[in-house]
Length: 396
Image (cartoon, rainbow, N blue to C red; front, side, top):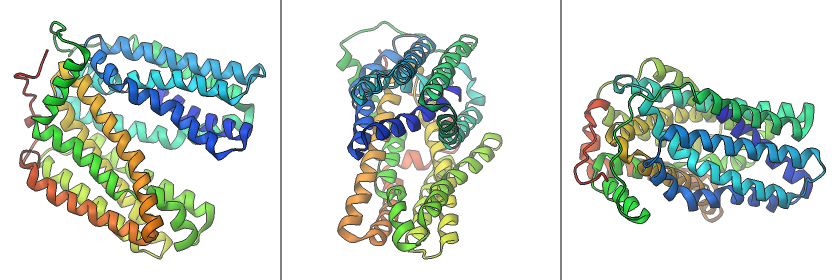
């Protein structure tokens, strides 16, 4: 949670500082590009490395490198070297650290939590991450207003360093035995792709997330709705954006104490269907409070879906394969978020905001129906523990 707070605070401060330096909206695109490109390039070797070395060590190194990046940004801000090009250079290194951070973080939890407690641990982790995603930008903005960029970067670097130190005390009791390393990087990653492709539960889980977010997301259209449909101004836009997060956190608190126990496959598909229906209500609503309520329901349904998908992915994957599988999953998630915003924007430009949002909700429901027929083993999973990893022919 400390690390997530640091990452979220730094994202806010970097964007604000770079725009203040350049007054050019394209500079914000370069901020994202400087971090996104190294992550895409390095996710494959990061996933492979996460399966070949202790994940706790890999995560600790990633956090130390990220902490160094925060301190470099602090030095640039406090010593009169605030040129945006130097900031981009540091962000490239920061993106490299995040590429290794992601698979290691996702794959470490099953090694430190017993299998019978993994479902609650995953739900708690998801809820804490969403809480940080909501609160950290606010805290980052307050620190920036109070002490400037230098103070905020120093706080981020300290939090990441503290995360690495706290990780030292975490025991790794449930790690699988690593086999001998054979083949090239691409051969090993190809084994991971083959493993995903031949496991209907894993392939269905990852692809459902990709297409549901790609086709059904409405976040990119919120400014248009706030300005032209609901006519609520920037304050209303802020409330709309927070509504989905409120639903996510509330449902995360519930799942942390009462995780879904039975009929998890059907519950997951039902949650995605509710997500699509809630987005349809939002698309057709002309009442602000109804729109907020619809987004809260969509956020709660999305949290149920994310929890079950994440848990199924962890329960279905052998420990020796988790790094590569989680790297592919992260690549799909990143693609769905980025391409989903592009899809929503282009659809709104061609069709108008309301028809584009309606089309997205309908497509989400169509995906649910199609995936329930295509991935029957995923639909029929009863308990998370039933999704046992099948490793034959898949491990190195």
